[in-house]
Length: 185
Image (cartoon, rainbow, N blue to C red; front, side):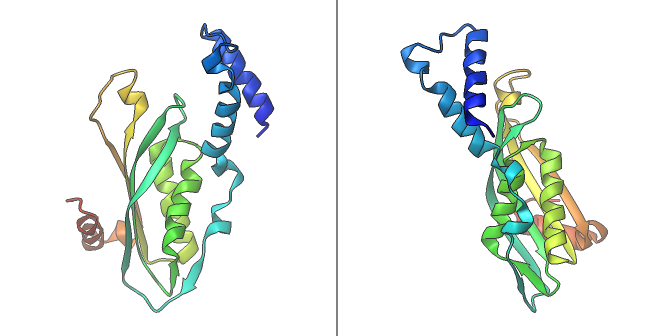
């Protein structure tokens, strides 16, 4: 990303909305926004496969990481959405380093997103990396595009899930996952 170009575009945007980008509080804003965007959209320059550490393991049980913080930007209004991600999988000789599960979430969240796609991308990445028997991902988020504008619903939470393999095919496995993350099915 060309930070200078983004800063110039932000300066133009400030003018377009009726602001004076040369006033005291806004003088450094275009550069700040450019640096912020570089971080917020860093997922475009990262390959999640390069961040994942997989370990050989005899584990064949359900592994769950709950309450992974999610911060992303809605692709429709470029406003944030934020919440929690819960990931579960049944290992089949391979496990992912636990911090790498959070990194997978971050890589995909740091792109313009819709929550439905983000959920599916995380599930697919875990499945591909581990060859798991099954994977379940649930993401619960609040969307500022619903809270600040449009319908202005302050307490709405969107929940999405993606289930693959045994989590999809076997109701008992799916129920166990949902119970373990504290969500009743």
